[in-house]
Figure 1 (cartoon, helix red, strand yellow):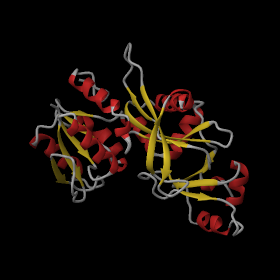
Figure 2: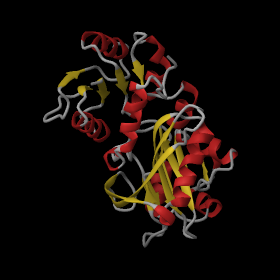
Figure 3: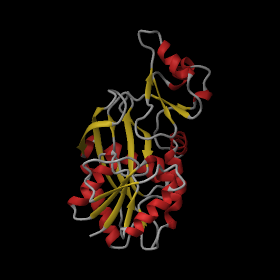
Figure 4: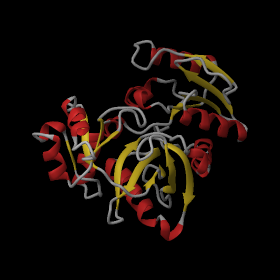
Length: 307
């Protein structure tokens, strides 16, 4: 039995992981900054926000008090912080997070797009609001309708589609007027959206990356937003998406569990929208990812900090 601390246990990713871990026979301590009702964790502790200087000390205290073996962060806001601090936990504790440099890149959607484009990985045309004189110019240069979203944010918060509708584009112009370069602009990809989940190990003979493609069959905001429902897709239907997701994760140098957003352009070709360096909300649809992580942890071959 592994004793696991899961952060953000009140959120979709954390609650899903806690449930999977319990079903596999492991002990789970969940933490969250808000009270959690009906958690699958054996125990839930309240902690400060990750922006608080007390947050890491609180995590370390809980790890020591409860004999935790493995820490799994699931909250976007904390990933860079926890990655930078993962050597500060006790020597016998593993933290399931990639190295700080690639985590910082994945945390900033503009840096993600820039690095992937430079590596030849397909992404939608993109830029910063400051690159364009107006929303009309952005639409003309990027090829039509646009998606705007904060460069650093959690989940689908703030994502909007800007287009010329029956109002002549007045709403798009209004939204555009409020944007600065803390936002990213992307060409809107109108096709099917996917949430491929990837488990990438440190380079090791005979170890291939594990990739499972999930299709988002319903989105919270209609055409954008978090997935309300997904289905697992395999074979020829998803081979190009799987290959693209794996190439993107490799290009950024991430290891461990990674959640990728991919969408098809009008011509059917897939492009990467963003990358999250953690387990996603839909990991239960790919249970082999967590099982693989735990097998490697027990065998002493984790993807995180070297032993």
